Length: 180
Image (tube, rainbow, N blue to C red; front, side, top):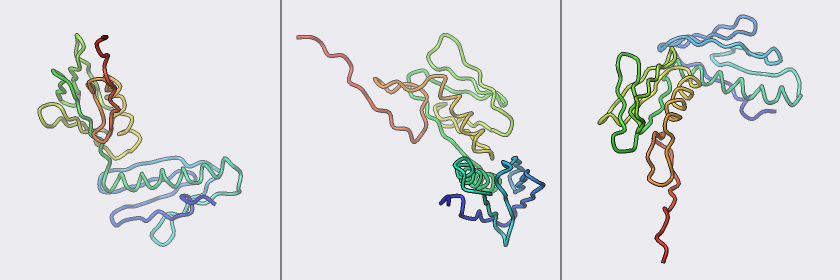
């Protein structure tokens, strides 16, 4: 049995979970998230927790069992606390500016890059325009938005310039040395 899938998901106070066939809806203080569950997986709300089970031990169903439980856990966590990714801009002249909801990045190109976040994702710029915070209730949307911002100028290994995640460690390389 799946080690992750067999664990029940606790429903904290203030969170309401409803099931309609294969559709789960989680409503909490920060918003509402909905998702369709695969037909081979059954989800039940019992005694203040969500229990995920599968029909049989086929390889695909085993994989879906743990995946579905993790997705539901992320939904519950998102509507209660939300998710946050922090990006740092490293480099001379690298700046981020927020105009309304639109993020304008100056990342060493001859032009500015304009990034419009998807619905449900909010952006903040802190510090001396070098820290970008991506927040939202849907973990997938927050991660995807942060990855798209990072993709504008990924960090390079020689000087470490670029847009990187706060907890990312960049392996540095030595530059060329002068010949003797």
